[in-house]
Image (cartoon, rainbow, N blue to C red):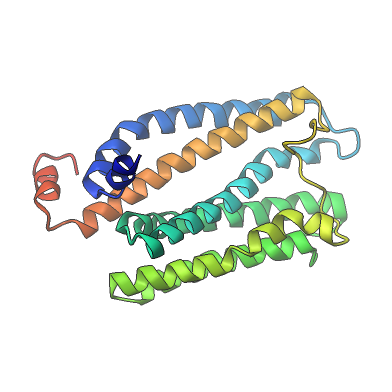
Length: 247
């Protein structure tokens, strides 16, 4: 187990593994996401209260899931950075922070589109919406801080601390609909409860969620490979990779 853990900290080893995984992540993810979106947007039945406007859920929910999950992954990597000082963990944080910001923006945008016909307004300072906006600012802060400090080690430590401070916002996002009076509806999926939607509505949603997670995996690998080539540009294995045309 420890040997695998240390191998994961090797940029060269990770680069090779990522190259093998990426085609599977991309095509399987794209297939599941496309199937879920086509099924949900075109063939799932209308909601008895919201009609067709609820279909934005098939984009909104996967984006919101990823927005929070990516930050939790970053927090785990931040712990590894601070405790074990494995530079690949910091590289992960730097690579996926922009991706997390995009998913958060997409969740906010689709939420606003959904909110207009449902609540009669594009935006309200609802607890869930406000905490999601804070998450977007946290992503921006991580991106800015990691770019502002020239020394890699100092940037890694400072960014890791910021990520861990901001992780307190994740449970606020999750439980905001239970802790406060909000307009936002409760979670669509709960591990301890049966889905309130019919199977022909929640199955495509599940496919879209799984597909987007796999697409994120592909994006994370792609961006990390780019960062590895930049950081390790002076090493022999990267120079050989570039000469062979694979880098």
